[in-house]
Image (cartoon, rainbow, N blue to C red; front, side):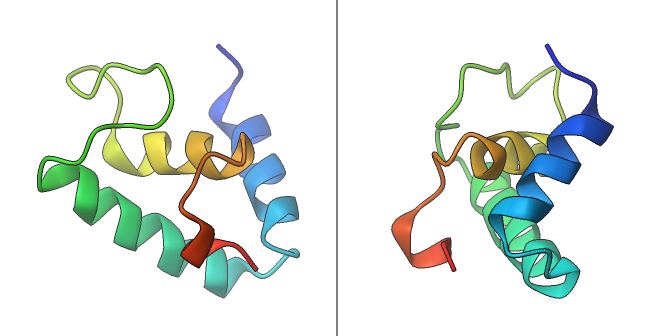
Length: 69
């Protein structure tokens, strides 16, 4: 597993280096995960924070199409 700093940088790049947009997308997806959504990446929801899972999904381009720029 990569360091979260590397994942965050990759996710930021996927969002066109727009930190505001990235924070909104991460917050929305973390809320969905907290409400029972299934992660789109192979990470354990009980061991990894929801915001980190959301970052991994964005970095790996496995986020929902409506969240892409």
